[in-house]
Image 1 (cartoon, helix red, strand yellow):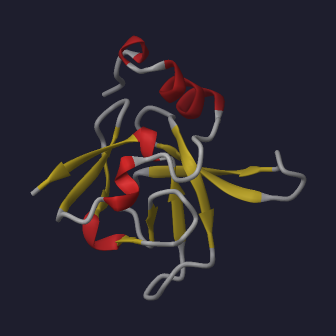
Image 2 (tube, helix red, strand yellow):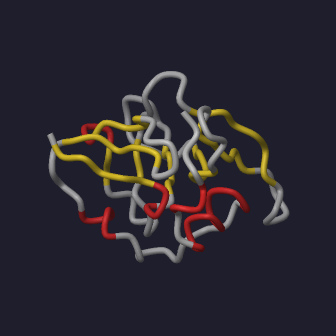
Length: 122
């Protein structure tokens, strides 16, 4: 289910389809503490449960686990060193980078651009 990109803001299009990044600390979702789920803003695929969200101190909403089979990854060398970038499998939208410095049980940190997410409370 791919969504019409014209419904997105210019900043959302930049992040999702030109692999941009929002300013750290700019997302209202950094402070979201309610129980619920996080969805791709472009195609509304469910990506994360709130139980996997944590405060990483990075300035972006962070999760230690995503739902199964929702992302594709590729290597990003834009900063001069390799990082793992992840994209929504359904629409191809870039969401952020995956690091190995997260909490247990996974040790992963999905560092997600908040502008790419929709939060729906339970």
